[in-house]
Image (cartoon, rainbow, N blue to C red):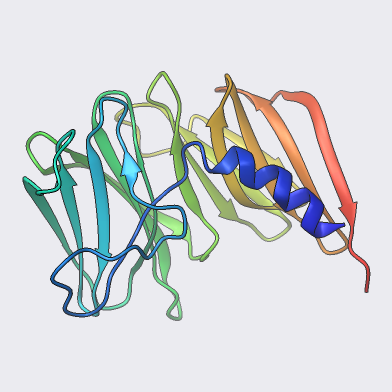
Length: 214
């Protein structure tokens, strides 16, 4: 059943996929992404606060409840729906523009300087797109395509994918854990959970499917 499959994937997804948001005029950042804040390995926390015309990202140092850095992403249509750190301390924010002709965009920030260092654009607009990173700082972005979907892999500094994983299912969730890329796919009649070798299109043999009862 669909619920059994997503219960299994949820255990994996909670390892790295996270984020949050708030109301239009918060005094304290309120959680908005369901999994909570994004945490860097050494304990730095990034909290995404979505407001009507601006998305703010608050940076909290380890063991502190006071933020020491703030990023402001001014936008009237884009919605921040995903965030991830890599091992260098770079922060990736995924932004979706659901308007007609809108795109999905990924911004990379240097957390130490709060400067934008990379902007990946022209990805198809999709609310289920998200970002993840691995231990070699490779960025993963799941996207929708005409049939099914893709997972695009970007090496540090690149704005064009070096590898693309293509599937007839749509990738709706992903995380890097236990030395593998785990992907939750949604299909018309069945969902699937797949495990891939990092930085590769090679599937590592696990693919569980569930028939949807109608």
